[in-house]
Structure formats: C-alpha cells, structure tokens
Length: 120
Image (cartoon, rainbow, N blue to C red; front, side, top):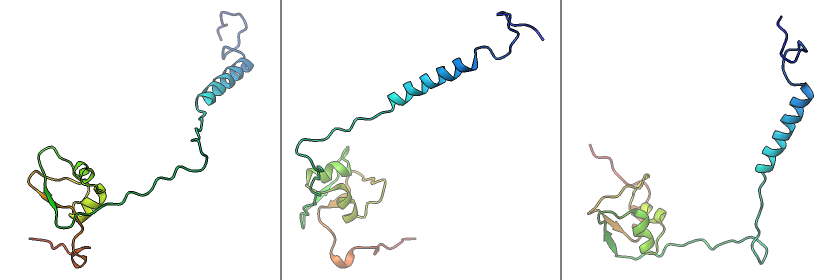
C-alpha cells in the first residue's frame, strides 16, 4: 500500500466530517433556490374570470385564406376556437386549408354528434 502525500496513509482523502458539512451546505443552497413566492392580488379572494361564451352568427360562414388559423378566425368572430372546431367537425390538430368554408354557428341539432359517414 502506498502512502498518500500528506503522510497519513489513509485512503479517501478529506475527513468524513468535512464531506458531510460540504454536502449539507450544498443541499441548503440548492433548497434555497427552489423556494417560491406567492403573489396575491389586491382585493383578496380568487381572481375568477367569467367563462368565455361563443356568440354564434347564424347563417354566416367564412372562407379560409392562406395563413389563417382556426384560432385567428374564431377570435376575429367572437367564437372560441374549440367551438368553431366542433361546429365544423375539425379534429385535432385542427388543420384547416385555404378555400375551406367554416360555419360560424353550430349545426342543426339533428346533424350534430357522430353523423359523419365513412367513404370508401
């Protein structure tokens, strides 16, 4: 067994107490970085916003232009993107194409809900 430069002949380097102290200091420093600060708004209570309700436009439709998105068309017409997609049977990922016509109102009650037919 070769002796270490410090002449102690021990393996493992630094004393165990020093290692534990260094680890504890590192852990405390790391825990301090992970803390969070909650900011409360003036007026107390929860800031509950009203639910956004779509305003259908019966009989109105738009033709998709290049560069438009479902979200953009919906917000420009006071409709949620989710409602516009549902009313026009546009499934995720909500892809629309130039020239496609989108209704700005829900379909007739009898036509909604799984009435699509598969074509061969």
